[in-house]
Structures are given as C-alpha cells and as structure tokens.
Length: 162
Length: 196
Image (tube, rainbow over all chains, first blue to last red; front, side, top):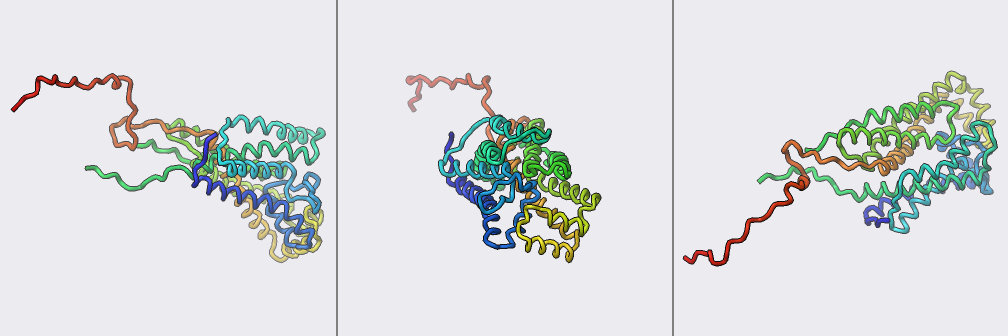
C-alpha cells in the first residue's frame, strides 16, 4: 500500500462524489416516483442504454424497482465503495489485475447460466456477487485517478543552450 | 529524442466499433455498461501493445484518452446499429412505441407514460432516435473512459530509453557497467609542490 498526495486526494474526492451522485440517483428515482413526482420516470430513461432494465431483475428497496438491474447496482455500489475506501484511508491498494478477473468469475458464471436457460441466482445474491468486482474496479480506478493527478506537469518551454 | 507514440485512432476504432456493434444488437442488451467499459479496456490493451512495439510508454492518462475515443466510436456505432434495427423491425412506429411504453413495467406512473406517448406523437420518431443516440454516446464515453483508465492502470509500460542517436534527451543516459570502473587520477605527492 502506498500513500496518496493531497492533489490526488482532491481529484479522488471529485470522482468519489460523482460516483455517489450516480448511486444516490439510482436509489432516489423510485422514491421520487413514490412521492408522486412524475418527472422521475423520465430519469429512468437516462439509464436505459446502460442496462436492460428488466423489472424482475431489479432490486426493490420498498419504494419501487430501481432503474438498473441488481448486477449493475452491485457494480455501481462496489465502484463507489472502492473509491470511498481509498479516499478515506488515504492509501493506494496495489494488486494484480487478474484478481479483478477472478472476482468477476461468479457473476460471469451466473450470467452464462442465464444464457443457457438454467436456474440463476436471485436478485440479492446477484447484487452481492457483483459488489466484489465493482469494489476491485473502484480501487483500480482510484489508482488511475491518483496517478494522473499526481503526474508531474510537462513543461513546454524550450531549454536554453548556453 | 523521445519515441513517437503510435496513433490512438486505430485501437479506438477497433475496440469501440466492434463492441459498439455488438451492444447495439437487440440480443445483447444485458450489462450494456460493461460493453462500453470493455470497449475502453480493450482499446487500452490494444494501444498498450502498439506502444510496447514502438518502444513508447503507456500510462493511465493515455489509457483514459484512448478509452474516451473508443467511447465516442462505441456510442456512435451502437446507436446507429440499434436505430437501424428499430427501423427495420418497425419499432419506431407510433403504435409500436405506444405498446412498448404501455407494456414497460419500468414506467410506473401512467401520467408519465401518457406524456411520453404524446411527446412521441408530436415530435416524431427521429427526435427519440437522436435523444437516445445522445444518451448512448454520453454514457459510452463515461463508461469507456473508466474502462480505459482501468486498462491504463493494468497495462502500464515504462518508456524505453531512446537516446541512441546522440540527440538531446531530458534524462541522462544509463551508466553502463563498462564505465563504472573509472578511477580518478592519483593525487600528486605532497613533496612535489613547487615553491615559487
């Protein structure tokens, strides 16, 4: 584990806040619909290209189905958790990329079972399985944001030859 | 002299075009955000291989940029393919759209469904195609850039030293083992000083 610089932490905070906004929007859309705000249904369309939005495969937190499926919700929640972990701890978690693939294997297997019409997991286990690769992807994304933010600026000035 | 970095266009076109085409098919609408992120990741992988072959460095910043380019291609190709399928299958007719909106369990509010149908009838199908394409491109760019950043972190390559032509370099050349056995000349003996 390595520490992160203040400038990298600032940009990491921006990325974490953006991820928080997306997760909050996902949770708040059915709540807003439940409160009678009809425009919230239009916000569901914003997620349409990013998810199949099959209602039977979406989590219901009490106010109505979420605008994305359980697997996508797990990925988003895990991604936010990964970014938030690095932001709060101030540490960069270095690991090999193959661990992300290993973490995604259960979700890929569940997806494959669905393709061949075999019984698949219910929504909450599907969500839980997707949180793990989402978390690792969030940690990798935090590393990437940190590296870009802490990269030295390239000077365009021509060196003097004396 | 720095090694010239290879073009980002070809990896972006290959990754964004191929995965955008697949994601635009009506049979592959599951986990579409992963198709976009995969396009960025694949573009970063292809570009890192090109950089490695050219002896240039590859870092997270370049991964993000090539992922962003792939996202633009992904969004354009995906929305075009999806719109073409909708046109061919009659999915953009007024009646088909009305049935689709009424049958969509995601639209819980009947008032919102009625608003959508009225808007579709007044604006025409092309308005919906354009709005949908715009959303597709924006989401494609965001997710693909994220995939490119992750690919940049995964496939990072340090630039090879290229100062072989005697030109200017921002970094000193590495000390070769042959030069490390340099011995400074011995100091002159104390009694050899000239006293003028």
